[in-house]
Length: 381
Ligand SMILES: Cc1ncc(COP(=O)(O)O)c(C=O)c1O
Image 1: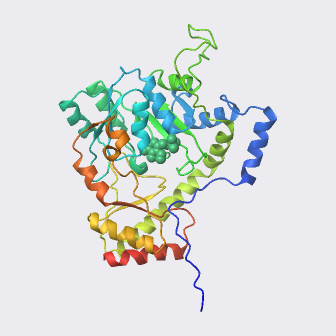
Image 2 (image 1 turned 180 degrees about the horizontal axis):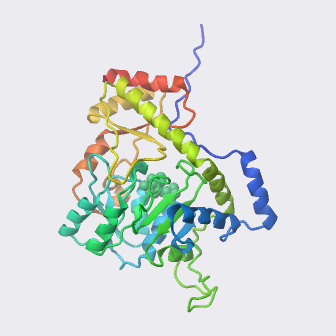
Image 3 (image 1 turned 90 degrees about the vertical axis):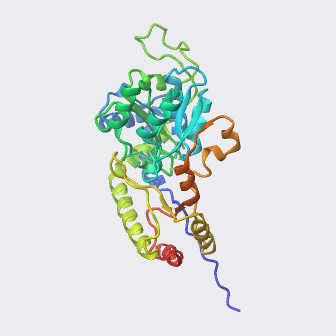
């Protein structure tokens, strides 16, 4: 009897991290000065590059240990009254909402736009007419950038602070010449991987400096402040980025442009192939007024209905192709979150939750892996 070797799974994502050889010179640099954390030279170097890229002063940004802490501390820095209503999209990663709860506030779960899959200023305005909202936390869904001029207008008109959860949008989301606050993730799976890491960029006076202080337990390090240096100024956390992570981030930055371009090409090719294989029965996230996605890190398709999504999921499972229901279930369908949230009607988000499916996407996908995915899509045509 001939033994058929089991087919390897096609993975969903494959990290694109620097090699140990690339890391070594940076680790040696770190070790030579024996500075491993606490805003060392590598974190400062990374922050100087970010300040230049975002066109802000160094005091208008702070690295943090991850985006979840970045969101939580940025919310804390807003000094909202306890239990404030923070509007978040129902379709997002859990960290958007858990950060709100952990900052002592209540998430209000809003609907998203059916085409861009994002919470828009129009949706936020309509919600503000119906109930009290104290702050808005839109998400750059799957890395798609927001229109920052539109959110700045919203902030001015409504007098409410907006923090963009741009976790997956490094390289796509910028300030676009507007005032605003952005929080990025530098997790391994994101477009600028540092292993773990986050970045808060904010033109709101004092916000980034406050986040930096909160990330260092709340200890005052400002010689010009009324409190002495070393005194506890507020109830912070430990959310500093280490020098190890900054080293990985700095290496990733050197390669970012090239990798982003390769990701864009791969995404365009795969979408084209999939559209043909499925006879155009898939829909993709539409670009909004915030501009294009510069460094896609995942691929999420929308099927015609829940039945078609289930069938594709099952076919992928049988063909040993990994899939993921990204951002699902919706936040209001998670028991631990539902009790903490105000849940509004979210028909678009519900429709998306029934029909979205994450498919494999990573640099270095082989022709054979791509063929296997196209093969399971053919019955849809
Ligand atoms: C929308 C969103 N917010 C927050 C996070 C959390 O980022 P981090 O892993 O850096 O804490 C993620 C992570 O995937 C995310 O997708």
